Length: 150
Image (tube, rainbow, N blue to C red; front, side, top):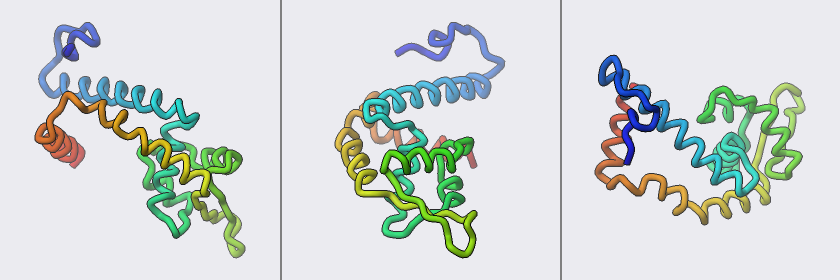
């Protein structure tokens, strides 16, 4: 497996912290590209997938746009625009609150649930991205990533 130095053709970093940060950014982008490529086969973006998963987790309750935005992995997403696009695809329904039209409640539809089921059936493909790591290594990686953010 190529090192970060080989991947980006850079032989020197200021220090190990700098190398680790560059490695995380590069690897994060690589993971995003792998996941996006997988989801493209279902004609759905990572952000749309994330919204569907949030809504499935909320079932049977609805979710507000604010709640969805807070729980999104990509905090830069335009949730309102994504929700409207997904509504047009029949993946979710949205309803304005009668007392405050600015407040919108969103629920996943049967079609959205079926799409998630189809994607879930392919989860071994997604899990294979981390096949080079043992369970102990994955636990250590998760601990270190949580620690880095903490």
